[in-house]
Image (cartoon, rainbow, N blue to C red; front, side, top):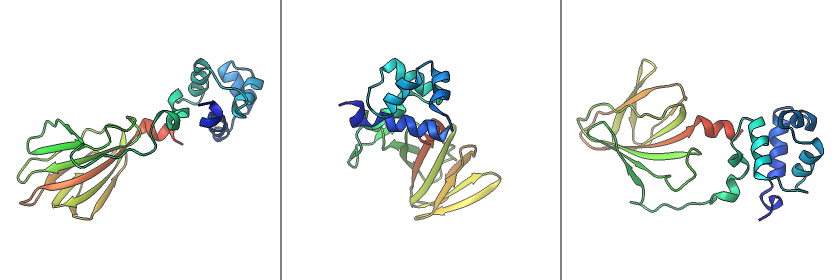
Length: 190
């Protein structure tokens, strides 16, 4: 597979233009001749790994941001029951990761099960935006000084700086689908 097949050049050009940089600006930031950068952007030449790393650093990215589609499957199918059980410190709760087979840090999806009469769960998702969808049952989410009641079909968006705890307020198990977009993934995908 060549860099043209992966279209690394247009990705680099796109990042450069979004940052408002000329080829000369990027050349100064990387120490790579503007003519070489132009050749890479036009997919006339393939960058070495060292060159790709220097360009990525100029954009405050990891070099993998240019290679994701070549290195990772575009479709990954996970059958029911194939998710990875994750440990939790809160009794009465379980977390199953659905996206373990996907490149880590891009997008994470988890099923969070809250048992009846269990204490609150405060997911440790760091600096990540989250989308929570109540699949069945009834739970409360407490955050930002407010309570939100989630019933089957309800959803909740949480900004990266929002800490929320979830609690089962029913006599049945509650299942929440939690989709997480880590900050690093958001910054590397703009």
